[in-house]
Image (cartoon, rainbow over all chains, first blue to last red; front, side, top):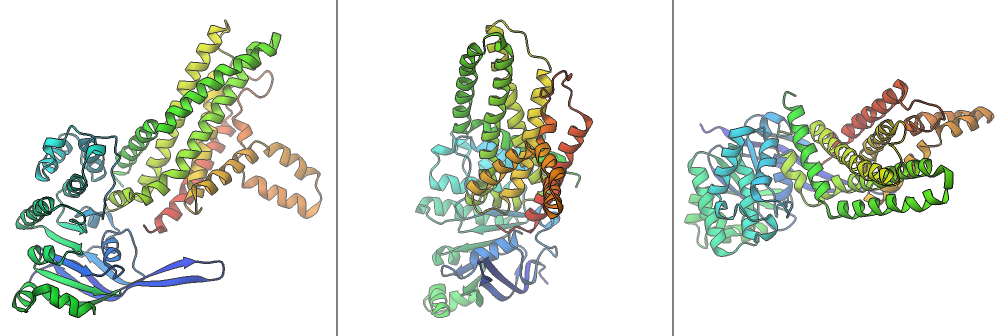
Length: 245
Length: 254
């Protein structure tokens, strides 16, 4: 039996926007139950507002569930032990433009509990792995969108996490950058890391993932395994379109 | 909890470096230099009291400049980190929110200390240029200014966690700063006032930090040392604001 890296059980997230009289409630996700097996690449597909980013934030402890429970390797995601096992790349990560990538990685490495030689080695390895080594002497202000995304990935990889949570990792990138990032993620998965990524690009998810979760208006509409979409006429795209219609 | 101090220190150093690198820091430095230099005019007009006017006006200008920059930093700090999603990269790591908050407060306090030190050197150089020795209890006056800034920094962080904009944080903290310099007057009015009015004023005094305690050079003839009451009061206000802020931050979602 494969152990679960991530487990959602009956999760609901309601956002309350306080108003002068009462509050406006918006249910972002509801009745959400699924497991992500350790060592797999799992994709998350859905239209805008389907709840993809909410799931990512629930996983990384940035949001707290209104009901139900979320577990990462059996641990609550807001705890320090679970966070030490997670690397997170948010959509369009921001880094101070006036510093160099090494300085940004040094800061995030320190926050991940690294120091001294271990930190220097981890930062150098992350730069090399993401192909940023030749640009190490440039300021972040000079970086293209693709390079910023690579730096985002580098900071997520610093502490060698068991689970990578990536929110739109290839959003807005050129085809070559997408190819490089896809190859990097495949390499990380081959090392045994679990990867959970959200995307709007069905073809990228199709190429990378072993399983895909399809979200529709805050609910999990379908879980599709690779064998299923490979056997379906029209592939994953037709399954997705059918699910969201 | 073993990592609390190293994490808080990492956040503090990063916050300090970012605020010193901010383009507004240069603007504030130029403003401070110009203001301190302009105090020469007031000194000349004071005729035989030039040394005293130069010292007091310079110290006041330094405190107000540092206050303006510190409030600007605090009011935009957490808001900017949330808007740019930088905070996602911090709180998705094993960083306790208490360590982050302590680091952020520490970073702003380091900035305040640095500003006071730099402006203090400029001020002393100006006094020396006019042929005056360093004023009595000068270091204590700077320490008092630092304590005031530390108290208002901690309070402003607390406000920034529930206020809806950086402007409201600036305004509320500015009002608290002003009220903090009128605590003895408020106490006097409370003693004179009848019934409910007195109770309300006495209650209000408890909710306002007495910043007058940190004016080391105020009373004539004092040696200048900050009293233990001032130090204890400052520490208590900083800790109370820290724990109140932590209570809010622990519940905050991003």
